[in-house]
Length: 161
Image (tube, rainbow, N blue to C red):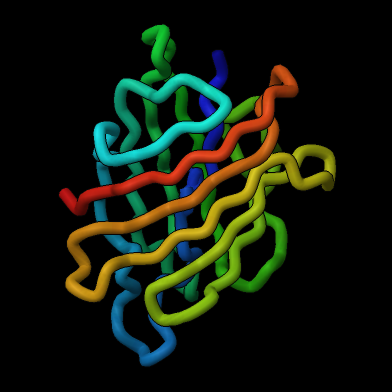
């Protein structure tokens, strides 16, 4: 079974992922860092839970972030998605993830963001993410349709590593 990701992915991005190297006040984005999903605290609708899921977000300069998501599906299959994006709503290429070829991310606040994964210009997956006020955890909600056409929705709890 193919893992559903965001920024990402992607995150995405996961991001998983803000796509902002700087927060709105000029400080370093709270999304920058390494995140690991707490599978036991996360909820999975429509698909089996993953065994593990981690996202690493680094500053790529010029207001961009580099997002690397890696996971192990319930059947042991490993997956990965990678992209560099800016939270300007413009599409950026995604590599390593067959269900998406681009990502769009937007900041929705100083500790929140949203993203869409696209395939041939059509949104196939989406995500919304919020970093806690203490910066130690991140809550994500992801949904969409995987490569096999199955719909899913996940509520994810990530912990900063």
